[in-house]
Image (tube, rainbow, N blue to C red; front, side):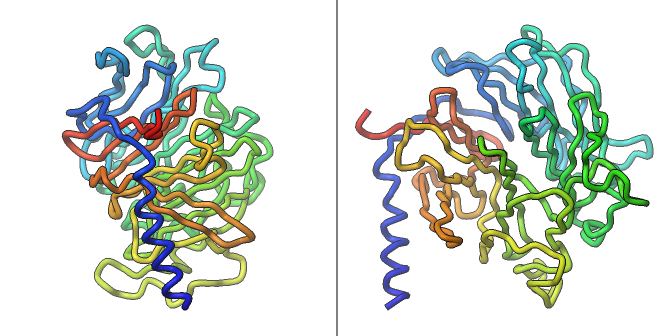
Length: 361
């Protein structure tokens, strides 16, 4: 009986997209990775090749921004996230993450602040460079979010070949970082007075975190790619250990066991995990009124399942629906406009920006 009920839920969920109409707004995007809204009409978006562009959604014009830093565009690396300063309307400050070579010619993650003046960046400054050198740009994390106190959260992935270091506090592999907007370290960071711990670290034991969101209530959620299985959504709190790779619900890509444990004392359990993997690529907590049926839900884009997972937590149980699978493409990013309208970025070359509207409009 339970199996039959689950099948009915899945069938209903997969048909949920029929309530929406999808419109391609922009196409021929080259490895677009993230976007932010400057207004209801204008967006700023990154392409991993190292291009930052501004686009008008009404007239479809696209212009490139000058003075963007040089990036290492290879593997999973390049120009990644873009975020607006909470005071953007008064200071025009934006933040970019990207992969580049350090002074030892190793790849690592950088966070840059800059002033957006017209179609150019000015007064650029690297405010964070991860102590996470690797041979190739893999598992960088690279997501940015702001807390209500204006401090910045940044995800720094485990580098793929360096997963064991996610359990050590002397590096930035597999960590969430917290810094001030000028790059200084908040005095209330959890490891600031711990010997041999890097003071920027906020939480640890992560893999490759490509989803990070702070709700209006101040709660922090992230999702991360598992290996083969074991993708996770986590509720983030300072100082906590989220287990990777000591505990995991996934196995290695070769089929080898990474850890025989899914639980250990002192390590957090995910709110949910996906096995097999969906490859979660972005997360939005929808708090607008434009789509009442989506309000107060997590919306997670996925690269493998090629859909958006609507996730809610009811009495500790996750409830999921599959949305927008008719796009039939790897989905990289999801954002809501100031008025609450949803937009999707598809992944890879020849990418698209897709607007989602209720069918009755």
